[in-house]
Length: 401
Image (cartoon, rainbow, N blue to C red):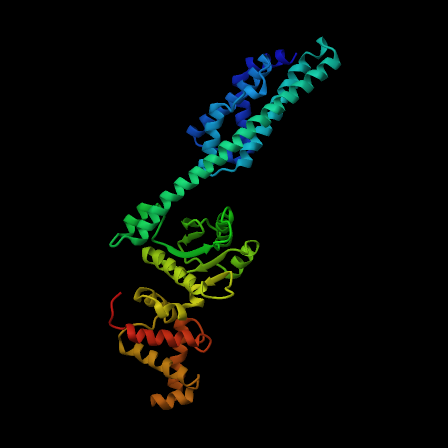
C-alpha cells in the first residue's frame, strides 16, 4: 500500500513540488530569494521528494541514502548568505508534514478498498520512513551548513580585512576610491569600536555576540573585521553622527564579562573613519594599563592621558571637539580663548578674571557665556579638558595637519 501511495505521489510530483515550494515562500521569510536562487530551492525540494519516493518504492535502506546534491548546494548557499540554519531545518519539518499529509490523503481515497487496520499500519509505516529520511538528511545538512559557514566566514573575513587595512593605511587615496574598495558609504559619519578577549579566554562565538550587541544598540549593522583571532574592529556608520550609548553597551555586554570595548568619537568621511579607530586604539592602550577597567571606555574618557603620546592629527581632532567655534587666528577668537583661560585659572571668579584682564567683570561674563553657547556646556563642568585643549590649541596654532 505504501508503494502504491508513493507511486501516486510520483505521478503528481511536478505539481506537488510547486505546491510545497510556494508554501515555503509563504511561511518562511528566508526562502524569498531572487529568481536564480529560487530555482535552486525548487531543485532542492524536487530532489528530496524524488529521493523519498524512491526510498519508499524500492525500499532503499537509510544508510545507502546521501543528501541530494541540489539540497547540499542549497544548504551551502544558505550558509553563504548568512541565512539561519533554523529556517532551513524548519522547511524540512514542514515538508515532512506536507508529504505525510499527501500520503494520508492518497490512502483515504482508497479507504473503501482496504481494511482499516491495514490502512493504519500503512500510515504508521509511511510516517516512520519519511521521518527517518528527514532526520538522516538533516544530520548531513547540519554538517554541510556549518562547514560552509566556517569556510565562508574565514574567506569573506580575510578578504574584508585586507580591504579595510588597505583603506586605513593607503596614503593619498581619495574618498571615492576608498568607498569603492570596501563598498561602504564613507561620506557620512563613523564611530569605531574595538572589542577583545584576553589570551586565556576562548574567542569562539564571543566576538560574534559583540557584533549583535553593537547592532542592537546602534540600530544598524556595523562594518566589522577581525584584527586578529581575539580582537574585533567595528564601525557604526550613518548620515548623522552615531552616538553609541555606553550604558546600553555595558548592559548588552553584561553576559560577556570577558569582553572589553573601547570607542572612538564619531567622525566624518574617510578621515573620521580612520581617526575614530585610532582613538579607540589609543583608548585600548590606556585601558590595557588599568587594573580594573570598565567594560566600555570612550576615548574622550581617557583622552588627557592618551594624548600625552598622541600624534598631531588625533590631537587636532580632540581640540576641535572641545573648543568648537573657538579655533582660528583672528583677534576676536584669540580674545575669547584668553578670557576663558584666565577665568578658569581664577576658579570661575569673574571679578578676579576682570582684574587680571583689566576689563569690567560684565565683559568677562559676556565672553564666558558666549563660549559656553559655542561649546554647549558649562566651562566649569569640563574644566580640565578645556584647559588642556586651550593650551594645546596655542601650541598647535600655525601648524598644518
